[in-house]
Amino acid sequence: MQILVRKFLRPTSPFSRVIGSYTYKYSTNDVLDIGQPSPATHPQLMKEGEVTPGISGDEYISRRKKLLDLLPKNSLAIIAAAPVKMMTDVVPYTFRQDSDYLYITGCQQPGGVAVLGHEFGLCMFMPEATFHDVTWQGPTAGVHVALERFKAEKAYPLTKLREVLPGMIKGCSRVFHNNLTAVPTYTELEAFQSIALMGKVRDLSCFTHELRWVKSPSELKLMRDSASIICQALLQTMLHSKTYPYESMLAAKVEYESKMRGAQRMA
Image (cartoon, rainbow, N blue to C red; front, side, top):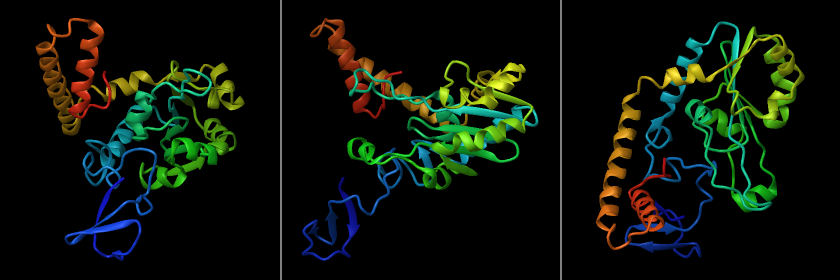
């Protein structure tokens, strides 16, 4: 990664070279890598204060407050991040975050569990990366990032979930979660199974769907940008439809044109 900094470094440094009044430093040691884009690592994509491109930290906090307003008193919402799915024993599929987890937290990384409650706000349980994980996949967001970047009120390592979450569940009247994306990390807990047997576990998706009915100005801008990208990509693909008449080529062309214009993935 190339970072542009003012000329405070020694010109003789083996990791820097002076061009004009600036020094180009080839290092990421001065930038915190949290495992996903941030304004510090990707200033061309994100503005200061944004957690994900186009969406600020304040907007994520607002989403959580609106969800809590919809939830009954003394209830709890548990939202799990999507797991990594493997193509082979060593090759993963391209990761896509669970929609509700991303919508509420802004975290784009796998393996975590978010808990939302009236008494404590957002509590995030974050996976702890091993040395092997960091070597092959890079750094990931931990407890500190959950508190500082995602603005969680509480955060614990995922290994503490079995100690902390049962107490949260026992103190509530109902638990809401997404039945289709639930993970054994919390569903196998005795406290969760007990409250489920009492018929006090409900589906959360009706609430998260309702939150999305009214779009914010930031969301509308992202939607317009996405529409503009795919319109331009389709036009470019149509121009090549006679030269490259095969569906696989046209699919590759439209995806290429979309990503060249800033799209993260196809819908």
